[in-house]
Image 1: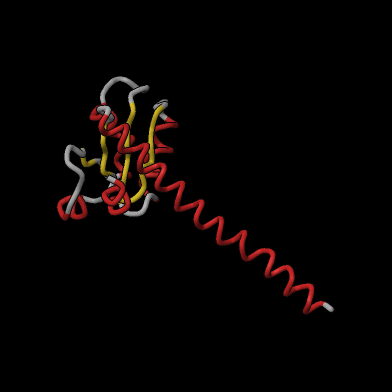
Image 2: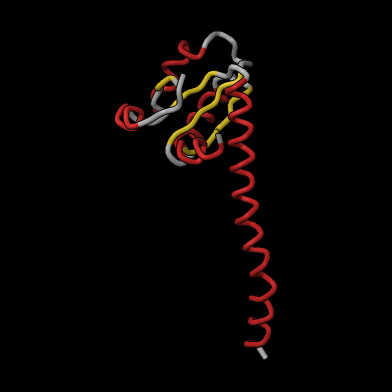
Length: 123
């Protein structure tokens, strides 16, 4: 009886899991498209990776401000805390941290564009 119940639960849950994964990918793609629209509209573009990563390839026009230096280098972002800022890194982790830092400092329109490779593919 328990085995059948577990099997039924597993079968019911499996489609939900696969939908979540595709929704996650869709969300990342939507964010990348939003980021590109912002970049084309003149957003401040910031690569928050290391100098070595930046030197191996970066988006044209990106400023290099490593995520752990973002709070001390906000003057490089301009004076308007309502301006759109697009951040990216390798996977979206460091740009997410930098986004949180900027928001805690009063920046109101910061986009975590995620990873460099994903962003390049979405272009």
